Image 1 (tube, rainbow, N blue to C red):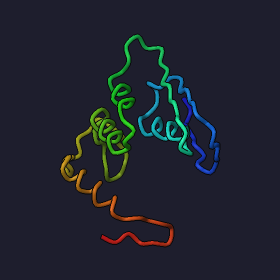
Image 2 (cartoon, rainbow, N blue to C red):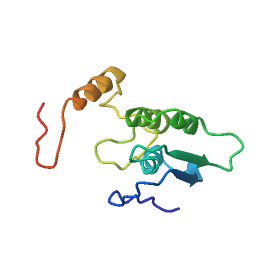
Image 3 (cartoon, one colour):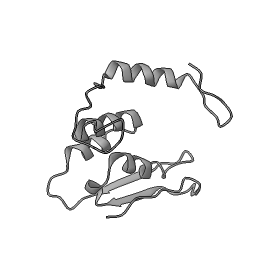
Amino acid sequence: MTTTVVEVGISLPRLSIIVIVGAEKMGLASLHQLRGRVGRNGGIGYCYLYTKLESIPERLKEFAATLDGFKVAEIDLKNRQAGDLLDGTIQHGETFNYFDYDEDIALKAKERLKKFKISQNDEMKF
């Protein structure tokens, strides 16, 4: 197994197609990051997810149906479960006792974050 590294400093403005082989082995955040490297300058981009599995995993179908990073995170949370949010030793499959994911709270946070533009020199103010 390898770790996917996406160098965000590389600019390939005409890159329009990416084929991800073994997509079922990758996390949704990595897939979303890779998919975001194509079609960057207003061009059309295509991301093909390839798997040798006989049936396509539901999480990949859901991933392919959205470009929204917040929705991708929701799909990932639903499939992997929360894990341990405090020390990170349990990466998935556990329900965190002090946090129950609430879609209304997530939507409010998403809307609030849209109002703020953050640059390197700005502080986030709520």
